[in-house]
Each structure stands twice: as structure tokens, then as C-alpha cells.
Image (tube, rainbow, N blue to C red):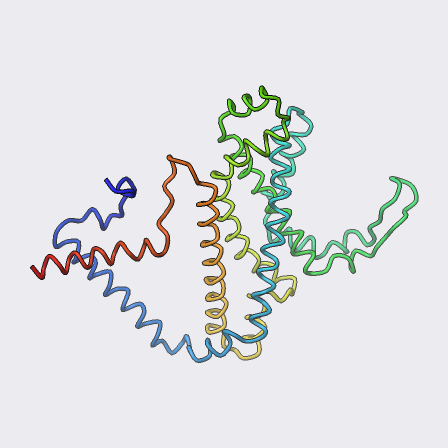
Amino acid sequence: MTERDDVPHSWLDQVQGPGRWVARIIIAVLAAMLVHLLLTSKTIQWPVVWQYFSSKLIIEGAERTVELTVLAMAIGITIGITLALMRLSRSLLIREAAGLYIWFFRGTPLLVQVVFWFNLSSFIQVIGIGIPFGPTFVSANVNNLVTPFVAALLGLGLNEGAYMSEVVRAGILSVDTGQAEASLALGMSESLTMRRVVFPQAMRVIIPPTGNQAIGMLKSSSLVSVTALPELLYSAQSIYARTFQTIPLLIVASLWYLILTTVLTIGQYYIERYFGRGSSKQRLPPTLIEGLQAPLRRLMSFGDRHAT
């Protein structure tokens, strides 16, 4: 048995004999028809797509989308870890406070939250630091403080923290409690046990859904276009509002989203591979090279059988 013989096969691998090749031919013909439709469609206007694909406005929008995704995920992960530890606290008050945060931010639409932060100055005009019910030492105008970029970060990051808290909590609970008890018995503190024993093992469970959340964040960043923040989708919209070439510009934005999500997916794979070292229970998906080698070996073996 080879290393990957125990990996479940697709439905196509279950088809035996000539039926397998018939199925592959049908799939190949359908794929060729789809490619032909996309390449010859006059609605798509590929020359227009390539014209705007690397335009300055689109590139700047893609950069801002990446910046939003990275910063919002950093905020979300930080809040998520904090809330997860609060949910596992022995204090009922701390657990309920974390639960209230998660309940509120998961229960209200993300778009509503982004719009709320963008219009915060309508609710609070001035924010300051001082003595409660007493004098204020430092104050600032909310309209100047909460820019569209800050409003987008607050909306995306605070909302993501509620979801990441459940991801982190699930990862911590997946680690056998006996390991933490053994570490405490050896004289390790609770914080050291969490950092050195629990979290490294919990990462195997945390990383896959975190990667999924990061990809979701990348696409959810398009919602901040309602604040007129020039991210990727808003940049495409601002161009086709002038040129009336809606479909080509939407394809440009979609291609950039596909490129960025592909980069995140590759990064997630190698992070999973790093934290999955030494795990006999886990079977990681093949790398890109391994994925290409398998069909090539099958094709060569098919040719060898027919040549003889």
C-alpha cells in the first residue's frame, strides 16, 4: 500500500473499464465547450478585460483589499483568541461577557455593522479620554477620527473576532485535557501550558477554518464599497460607471479575487503542513506537483498497455 492508498477517491475513480474513459471524454468535451464559450463571447470583450486588468486604479484597489484583509484578520484573530480564553474562564461574568459579544456581532449583518461605524459621527460627535462623569483630558472629532478605512477595519475586524473566537475555542477543546494536567503537574504555569502544549496542538484544528475565514474576509471586503472606500470592487465600479463596460470590469475584479484567494489557499496549505508535522492521523492533500504527477502516470501507463 502506498502512502496515499488510504485517501478516499473521487467518484470517477470508482468507475471501472471503458466507462471511466467515456466519463473523462464527456468531462473534457464539456470543459472545452465552456472554454470556447468564454473565449468567443462578445459580451465579455476580452481586449477590454486585459486593458483594465493591470490599470493603476485596479492595482491600487487590489492592494487596498489585501491591506484590509490582513489588518482585519489580525484584529479578528487577536479578539478571537481573547474571547476564546474568556469563554473558557472559570468566572461566570467573564464567560457571559464574551458570549454577549459573540451573540451580538454574529447576530447582526456585517454590512449593517460597516455602515454603522461609517456613520458613527451621527451618533457620537466627540470622543475623549478623561475621568468618568468628570473632566475630559483629550478629545477628538469622531468624523475626523473614523475615516472610511477605519470604519471598514472596525466593521470587518470586530465582526471577524466573534467567529474566530469559536474557531480558537474549538481548537483548544480538541486537545486532550490530560496533556494540560500533566504539564501543570510538572510545574508549568497555566499560561506557559497554553503557549507550549495546548496551542501548538490546537493549531492543527484552528488553521483550516482560519484559512477559510481569511478567504471569506477577502471577499467580504467588497462590502465596504458602500463607504466609497476605493477597494477592488469599488475601483471596478468607478471605471464601468464612466465607460458603461460593466461585464468586462466585473470579470477583471473576479480574476483578481481568484488570484488573491489562490495565494491564500497555497499559504494555508503550507501552514497546515508545518503544524501537521508528526501527526499520523492527518493526511494532507497532495502538493501541486504531486497532483500533476498522478494523472501523468496514469496516462503513461495507459499508453504503455496499448503499445504492447
